[in-house]
Image (tube, rainbow over all chains, first blue to last red; front, side):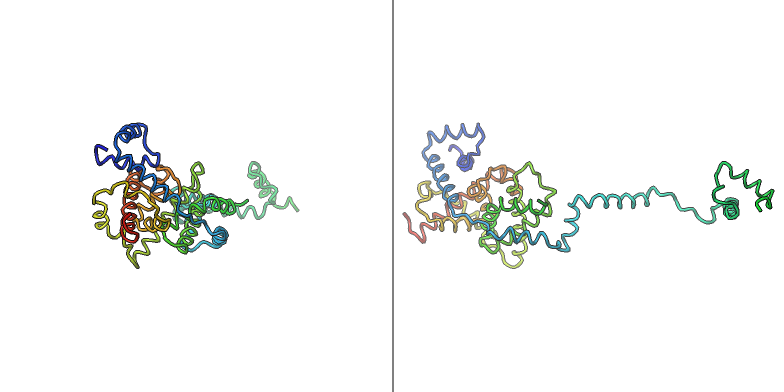
Length: 159
Length: 179
């Protein structure tokens, strides 16, 4: 190689990871440079040596051990993380969050006792009293006033 | 088939690759078992993040590496890792002249010699070389697993091999004599 910086390309060449331009440049150089050709061969031999190392296989029982752990209750530190990634938990969580936000920002201000008009309170009280003497079936809004009037005017008519 | 069963099926398919990587990182079976177990549990808990368009084994290797880094961080509190701790010494070692390619090609070294030399590499070089040469991952996938740019992968593999050759040459010159 003309420049020392180019040497790392040899490793990438041994892995077949050069771009088209890099490969063309390197091929041209290696064809005339015995040292780099030798280095490339050495790197390929080294790669083959590592690839040929005996591989460790996963013990057959390991997936069952993992499955047993997955079935167990998550550790306290993980409960939140596990819960967050469970889509089924998002609906109630979202509803709860929305309710909390509505309460904080959108709910109407509570009416203080002093602000209630006295007339409205009295009217409400009177309505309750009237309902106690008028049969529920007659409490149809549109006819309420006229029926009440007639019964008050003729209190003995019902007997 | 429920969610757990589906996951265990994926784990059985990716397990050998994950276990071998764990063994190369940790250097022994007991720790490799623990690492794979922990990585599997973490993967299951984070399945919602898994992009099914990507290979499951690459995702599993990524989690495994993170579990290993956490584990090593904790272990370092008890004992420093000799090779990684001595970056200065390593730089000095690598700064020497390159060996003649004829001297550094594998010349009948046993698998045990190569394994020992590989185990002696600093973890960031070892992980890149193992993923490339043993697991057959492309640089793009290695970059994902190691969470570094592809250029860094290329550089780490180059440096890792260069160091590997030197270690093997020293082994040959020491214990086995110069050929």
